[in-house]
Amino acid sequence: MAIGSDGLGHINFTNAELTQVFGYAALVVILAEGGLGTKWKEIKPVLPAAASLAVVGVAVSVGVTAAGAHYLVGLEWRQALIIGAVVSSTDAAAVFSVLRKVPLPARLTGTLEAESGFNDAPVVILVVAFSTAGPLEQWYVLVGEILLELAIGAAIGLAVGWLGSWALRHVALPASGLYPIAVMSIAITAYALGALAHGSGFLAVYLAAMVLGNTGLPHWAATRGFAEGLGWIAQIGMFVLLGLLVTPHELGDDIWPAVIIGLVLTMVARPLEVVVSLLPFRVPWREQALLSWAGLRGAVPIILATIPMVNGVAAAHRIFNIVFVLVVVYTLVQGPTLPWVARKLRLGTEEPADIGIESAPLERLRGHLLSFTIPEGSRMHGVEISELRLPAGAAVTLVVREGKSFVPLPTTPLRHGDELLVVATDPVREAAERRLHAVSRGGKLAGWLGTNGANGDSGS
Image (cartoon, rainbow, N blue to C red):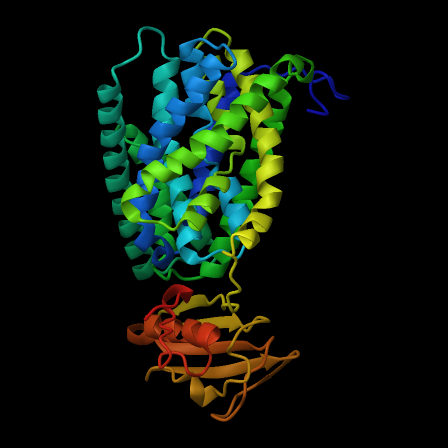
């Protein structure tokens, strides 16, 4: 905005179509990065609740927000429905970035992450339908289209993710740097296939990336770093175009309408959406309160607000301005206050630090070289090598401590900051990783005290 038409650069950028195309591309990368970082063990128990929030919840939110925009602000019904649909999508990038810094129970984090990954699909369908010229379709037709597109996207995403993970585990690429590129390419292919099949490409890319992220692929730490870097590039480029598309001197008349619609969304629509969607799941009221406040909006609603501009809807620029102001104001309010709300509701948790294991295949030896560093807060500190109780076929071969490497004895105690190299044969590689995660989170008695360590989670 500072270098745009009203700023120092005086750049007059009005290409909403280019912004929409780039925004879609950026959203694909953001969803892929989010899916790669989503732990299946965390979202598996909450999938029904997240799906309900993404479908039933979106319907409730659209209806309530549109009613507020029509009766309180005076917008026509089509414009009110478009705004209601646009702002009913929680932003994947905002949710992923904020939640990974807020120590919440795994079920809440999983619910919010899965919801943000799922609800883009039905919202896009609704915004496109409301922005199309002609009479609005019957509600049951829209529901049928949404369910069909979600089913097609889910099937393609799961299939592409499974085939891609199988291929990457059984084919040795000539360079380690190709693995991150291959993983992102597979995820983006899922989006393309989902869109070509008239399904939800957004759901397809998220599910494909989630499958890829939970199958123990080689060079995983490098892949995650590469995906995070691409995600940041996508967000930066997206924000630049969105900022240029805004004309600041036109926002003044839309500030109060945006604040009023935002109040309806935040204080009425979102809580009602959570209550109605989670009614069958008997979620405690404190968790429902946090889920209501954690419905973060970000760049995604602003991108979706370009759809009516491209389609030539009446007052489309006003819709864009209202959505822009709403997102900026309520992101500044909700994002920074989320940790405080979690503490007040006594839902914050302090989890022991887990390890990030890097795996490199040893093709000729039919094994894997696992490497990781013991972080501060890990309960692996003080555990002796023999107390790791790794499965037969896995062994700690080298420890690097304070820049010096040595071959450990069975009685060597481990310390924070130690880097370990573990060699594991193919049959026991996954069991060795599970055991290392378990000890990092549960200490030497992991397993006896109920910590299974699968993907860094705990359970009985």
